[in-house]
Picture 1 (spheres, helix red, strand yellow):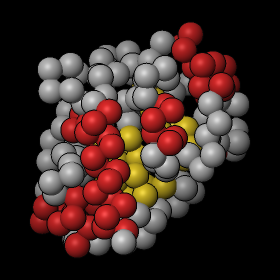
Picture 2: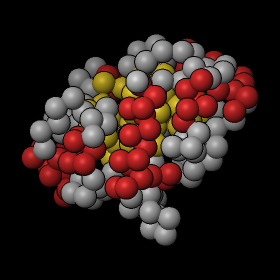
Picture 3: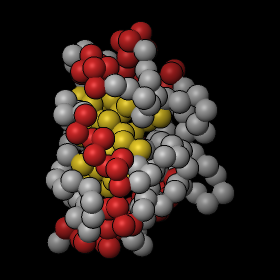
Picture 4: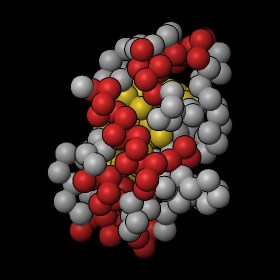
Length: 204
């Protein structure tokens, strides 16, 4: 099983996630988001020894200039959460980055859109509302393709991850459900530890 935690702060959360062996650490570059990170803090990521964790830049329709100035050499993956076409994904990948392409799922017909992005390293199935924790339709989870290349986001928590795993999901993406109840954008380290403990129990 693999875990990605998104909306992390470069100073507060990174070492904890590395120590807990979280597979993917996501950092949001989206001005409208309360989880948006300041560009001045990007270089702080270079001080960490990542071990087996990968750093992910979460973006929406990023420009080539932004990718070259901010993403290259600082991140292992770029997550594309916008309206990027298959051709655009290929272009970005040719710059030397691994790709996570988010597919927004509202109805069963949307699931098949992932086939357009064969060049993506990871496909993330998400709800239509980026930045808001909306539950992914349970009836559609079993319709998703299986395997380590496919991740699921949308109201995943310690309380339901076991049931979601039983539906065939092995790659979980979380953000708001691991935050303080009263502070949007601030990760609750106790919740992170508890979730990873649950994942480790399920592995065994």
